[in-house]
Length: 141
Image (cartoon, rainbow, N blue to C red):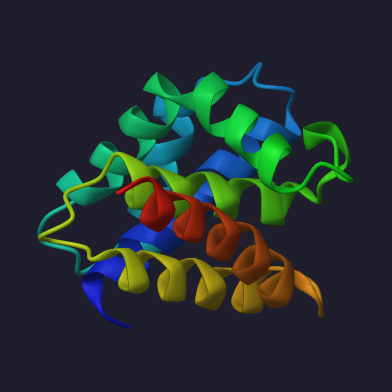
């Protein structure tokens, strides 16, 4: 597994656990534990922390974008895995370093996370939401 993909997986699992606890657990401790458990062999964990801090810094904005892009799905009704995969994908798509992670790579990585951790329709759902946002970005240029 490529190291950036592994970093995204650890970030997603950490966000999932934090979200599942209604954001009451210490996210930093969750991330540290998951790095120790799942990130053996990772030499650089800075990308995990970039994702986590970036998503938390932009959480309300990202969730608002999700609700606009999927109006039939209030954020609280979106499956926890899908919701956090969307948060990662949208962070990378909107706020991340476009040179390091081009938009289509961010979308593809989010779809792969959704397929790996979510349900049968998670990949299609994530693709639909991120595709909608990407088209809106392109139209604004």
